[in-house]
Image 1 (tube, rainbow, N blue to C red):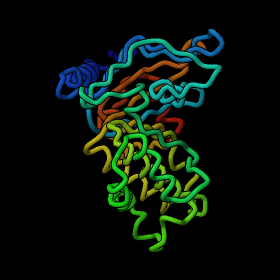
Image 2: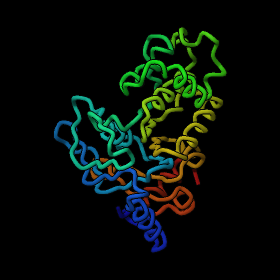
Image 3: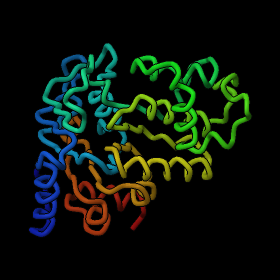
Image 4: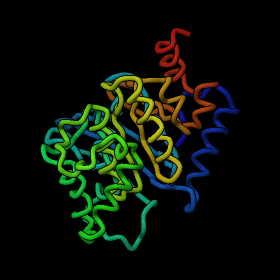
Length: 276
């Protein structure tokens, strides 16, 4: 993938290097080619070509309406009846011997609003384990580890298994959603504005979880917060509105993206968000 409207040869080389690096089998976790998303036969987003690493946090940014959340929905096959898509999504960061019914089996999705079932914490956590056909005798230990990994276990009472999930705070429910993703054993986590409705303390906790996940998994994070993108991401993707539809205009290492954005759309977005 070549970024549009690049300003310097150095940045062109940087973008090409990042994409070339991910093209190596041992480095590439997912390839996307000729992706188009439609709403009532009208194209609302196009991504010609993009390669993601096997691990690391990728911040997906851009103005409202540029297709960021829709992009995640297309990847996870969570499109509603008004949306359709075509193109190639090649996932390589999974065990070839792992037989999955659909592409969404490789993804763990964490929405802006926590998605927990109206039942106990235990019953929420058993859903991904049951789908994976994990032996019941292993459930409790795996649940405790997942809750510990997201910092929830120490905050819950001893009878946490019976506690209703919806009685947790918003930040705790969001972390329970992440714990369910861990138990799903997915290699790719998709986060869609996961902290936009949370307080600063909960936001800080979840940002740390996202950074930790990025050490072993591929994490795609849709965020409107440039500060959050700076704090947690290794790479940045910029979407923009182009000819009445969303399009990808830049992908680069976050350090380079914030230091010297390649496309005019990125520079304008950063200037509008920061006032600089």
